[in-house]
Every structure is written in C-alpha cells, then in structure tokens.
Amino acid sequence: MAKSTARKKREKVLRENGFDTTMRRGTWGTIVPITKKTKTKQERLTRKEKKYKQNHSSGYDENGFYFWLFSKRLLFFQ
Image (cartoon, rainbow, N blue to C red):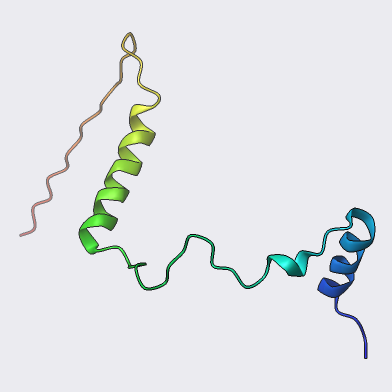
C-alpha cells in the first residue's frame, strides 16, 4: 500500500529531529468539551461592535479634520 503524504512528513520529522509527532496525539489540553459553550447573540453583537469601534478609532488624529457632504434629493411623484 502507498504511503500518505502526512505519513511521509511524520517519518521525515522523526528522521531529522528525532521527535515522534504521534506522541502529541490524544490530549485535549485545557479544553473541556463539557464547559465549552457557543456565544449568545448579545456576546456576538458586543464583539462585533467593539471590533469596528477599534478599527475606526485607531487612526484618530486630534489635529485632523473631516469633510462631510450632505445631499438629499426629494422626489415628488404625482
């Protein structure tokens, strides 16, 4: 049977570094699947709001100015 690309890479790392990458398998680390939960709607909205606030406020310059053009067309249908 042919060797997969992933297996070839694992064998190469073992040959060159002497580290077996398969030893890292099987642990969840600090993640406990029971306590992990999805974000609520309010948490998602708050995160999105803060994200865009940071993007706009990062380039703020006190000495700068901005130009705002306001045009409004009124269409009357008879």
